Image 1 (cartoon, rainbow, N blue to C red):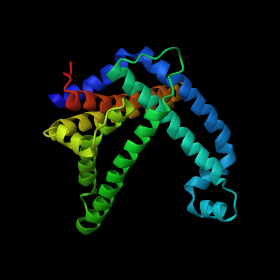
Image 2: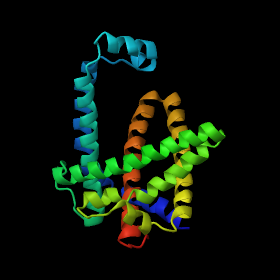
Image 3: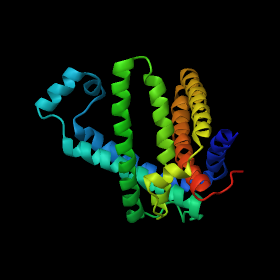
Image 4: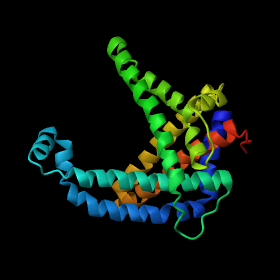
Length: 247
């Protein structure tokens, strides 16, 4: 039951605050789109090159790839994404409403969020190495181990919203706060997996029938699900750390 509540509450947070989601995500998203449009042609990469290992190797060896532009692209995407995520966490947890259409850029919180993300990434990479090793030894259980990895990540994910609002939360404290949450996390993950399948089917069907609407719907759904995913992290912190009730 709690797994369903976590799932429904995360979607409800976005649905009930669509205006604020647009205020927080629209302008940064447009900025990122312009940056990508400017930087991608400078990278020297093309889809055919990316998908073909030999062409990619030739491009690297011949110096056609601009690694500075690629770095700029990655940094731009990362900074804008964290800008949006931090602003959303603070809006939900601190009721820090966006003023106008450009959310406040909090460099200190974005930096703290980045460092917390690195800690989480370290755990993720370590666990992935274990999964690959076990999959090589046992075979056939990679999907199950990946699912287990997802549960473990959710047990630690509260450190991200904590960083966004300026609260100290260690990995151990996050793990202890979510003791007993494994079953709820599994239910929530299954529900999100099913939702993704349904949305993908609808988008693909729409794209085949009306291509222009299909592209627009895909962008809309992607933006919506991005806010839902960050709302899951917010909900985890609010419920398991701050002990807020889920409606």
